[in-house]
Amino acid sequence: MLSEIAPAKINLALHVRARRADGYHDIESLFAFAEDGDVLHAEPADALSLIIEGPFAEALAHEGTDNLVLRAARALAQAFDVDAGARLTLDKRVPVAAGLGGGSADAAAALRLLARLWRIDAGDPCIGEIAAGLGADVPACLASQTLRGEARGDVLLVADGSGLSTMPLLLANPRIPLATGPVFKGWDGVDRGALAPGDPLDAARAGRNDLEPPAIALVPEIGALVAMLAAQPGAVLARMSGSGASCFALFDRPAARSAAATALRARWPGYWCLETVLK
Image (cartoon, rainbow, N blue to C red; front, side):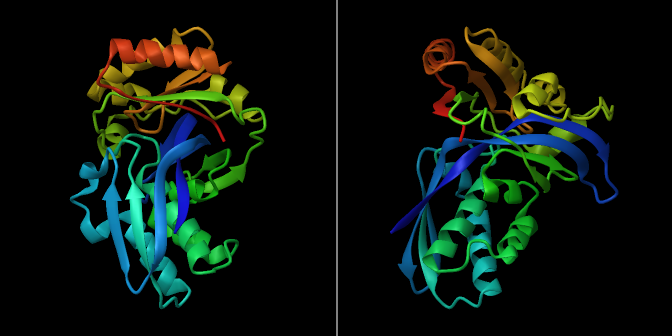
């Protein structure tokens, strides 16, 4: 059996610049990735199959064969004329509809994992094309490294993430699913300027998440969560990720992250919370 982590994605900053003719929005974003996330397992089989388990498995029960993992697997098999199957098991550890990559990260993990299982060159550009066809965030999740995203978020430039690597990270979610569409619909349409160039952390701290205000209007718990994280000793940056409802905080030392996690669990014992580090 082979295994692959689907690292949770965070948007250190997310600037919405304009609505495009194709219905998407022009965005500028800084992507970073946690060391932890969902875990996908695969073993040889005659056909493709997927079992979903873990604490958030039930949220995906309705997807059936339309799950992004299976769509990625079928697309990869078709593109490379693979006759073999795979028995896939997804350990769903990260909340669904949470702004942490979710299905995109799982689909990207499936592409990486099955390329190994089926002995496909992981550097083949066709894999990137498949990722782009699966969703706007899948190419970034395929790379799972610090990136600047433009256009729909799928025009990617590698950023120097050396200053972020192993930085203590706390992820939290109020266990309230939040669909992306209503959040974008609530954006006020005001272009508040470009994402700064240079060091990713400096650019992120000078930036913003333009989707945070409309998300808070839909789920007020997000505002209280970000404020609580930002007020913790040692917090370097606290913000909502993606279109929410997950939030994150970066800390200057692991002990500060752990203390913040303890405080969060005491205040909101029902919230999901994960202590990890940036890749």
